[in-house]
Image 1 (cartoon, one colour):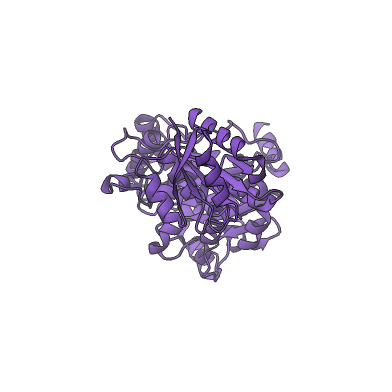
Image 2 (cartoon, one colour):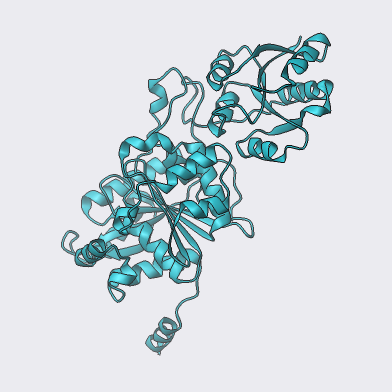
Length: 430
């Protein structure tokens, strides 16, 4: 039985000869359709009648998401390029095509590779598409090493429950303080419900750097140099990749593209701090009988790719309850995540007694966790920073909130403890 194959190599002079040779000789494959558009290719693949697709880099609209949709339809993907066309081969590999061949290897070799790809089930698995009836949860973190390889930057996801607990404040503070410690840092706004990093820092940017980076990543054209060009240089060690200010632009942040952006960010900066949205629901695909975009997919992708997840909770009875519930939800949706809890806006006016001790006791009782940091409430300081578009270090360098944020960044980056603080500690011991 021959393997049914689609071709999508529009404009290629060699397509007709390839199809003829595949059909003429018994190479184990047969071309059932020659597609000229991406929509035709995807719709045919979704019928389940084909097992492989031969693609070229010239197919208009071909991107990472399209390759993953082919994989979720059970179609093995093989790329074909002109001999010596390194740029086309590189682009196909960047968008996830696992096997790329020059057309001059011959029809028999192309057929052999296609049959082998199908037999070995070399199909890209996509956690954001697939059979709506498949067992839940459909989301699973991609495999990654426990610690980044040498020369690769770390990714910190700043996430938290609904109710504005201060995710953006923490993300900006950690990124700014890390940069001041000499760590090259990229601050990325990936909130699909309307990012505010640019507005908080007083940056006028209508282009949404993260959306532009996702578009480039989706087509396999993003590299560290281009990512640097799409971000704003705030200081020598701090870049900002601005987010979407309008919530209706969320489809521009597709999960697979966000993952690719973070991969390039690891090569651009030693540390990438990502401000995430709050929602983790995966119900979108249950509302459709076809592959559908997922608004919360970007957040899920960031959490799965991150080396460290900061769960930011508000230090009041409502905020604490939300944080505890959110931690349970995170364990269910992204089991590999090991979040660090940051309690924000700590104040005695809403928590009787010693607020830190009471909050710590509640966290241990209901979530089995301790907070990594307690950030004091400082509305006047934050108002000043917001009004001037400044960071905490610029607006109020000596404030307790800034000092707590600096200590959190030091712990996260592994920077040595300041000499002055060590001396004070020794004096206290004496």
